[in-house]
Amino acid sequence: EAQVTQNPRYLITVTGKKLTVTCSQNMNHEYMSWYRQDPGLGLRQIYYSMNVEVTDKGDVPEGYKVSRKEKRNFPLILESPSPNQTSLYFCASSSRTGSSYNSPLHFGNGTRLTVT
Amino acid sequence: RKEVEQDPGPFNVPEGATVAFNCTYSNSASQSFFWYRQDCRKEPKLLMSVYSSGNEDGRFTAQLNRASQYISLLIRDSKLSDSATYLCVVRGQGGSYIPTFGRGTSLIVHP
Image 1 (spheres, each protein chain N blue to C red):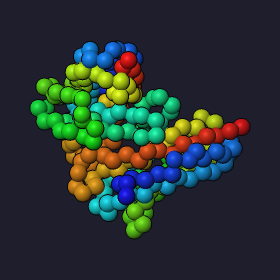
Image 2: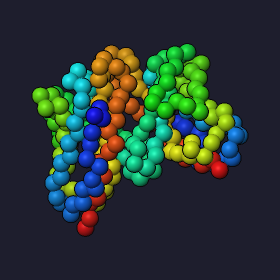
Image 3: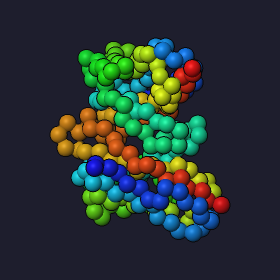
Image 4: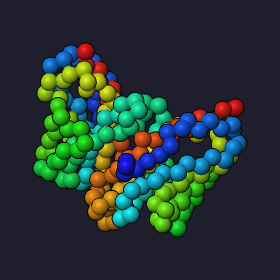
């Protein structure tokens, strides 16, 4: 089954304790992206990657890191989490082949992170 | 001006009603358009792509108006299960592959 898999689904941690949220897709998609969603603010892009070893900042990159060493994986790293990073996070991917503008985004199930 | 704008609602309609949402976009060079549905605290799911000539999928009809720079979603015969937030997504603004999301329109269908 074609899917984007995020783990964990729920995470409660304390300020300053490094954590990683994993994202993996099995559709051979070139494009992957991380979003956070907060009430009233909609989806905001954190980082994105156009292909392996190519990553770029989105609208709200501060406090986050990513890596794209393999095509299927795009982990989100919080080196020193703070309470303002409490949010619902989504990973998404899409194809860049063919008429790539028409390729829809596929989302993971989300990770609900609470930083105390 | 926000690049992609939606009326946040909520749109509160009875079962069986017809309801329509619009989404305006600012960049006339935008290439592709989508409607997503998002249930509370769950991931957005593709509802339908929006094609230039308009397209229909069951009770759902999507239209694109390039002259006025908006897309629309029409839902006929609303069901309780249609209650959700509907996100408009635009891609290709300014030649960028990065999609731009609207903040969503909330729909509540009541008995």
